[in-house]
Length: 118
Image (cartoon, rainbow, N blue to C red; front, side, top):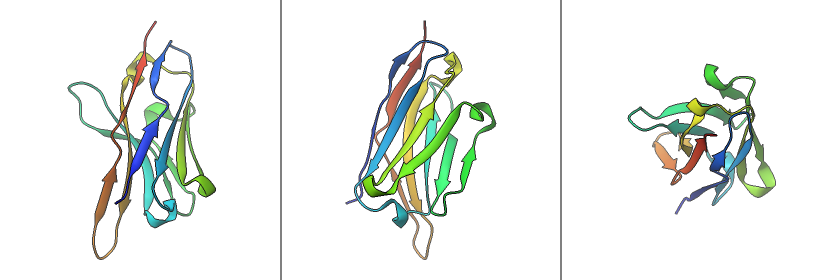
C-alpha cells in the first residue's frame, strides 16, 4: 500500500517561510514524478511544483523564484521550500506521485494546510 505523508504546514506571516515534506512509503524513483499541488477554498487544485525521476523541476509561474522543490533519495522524501510567502499562497497543499505506464497509478497525500496571514 503506497502512502504519501505530508507535514510542515501551518500559520505563517506574509514574507515568512515554511518547508513542506512528503514522505513516500517506498522509493521515490518508482514514480514518474512527484509534485506538490494546492487547492484554495472554492478553487481547483493546481500544480505548484514537480520533480521528475531525472531531477527535472517545473514550477507554476506564481511561485517561481520563491519556492524550491527538492528531494532526499535516501529518505524517500520530497520537500517544498516556500519563501516570501503571500496571502494568496494560502491553501491545502497536496503531494502527488503518479506512475505513467501500461497501467496508470495516481497516489495523493492527505494534504497539509498552509495559511499565510498577519
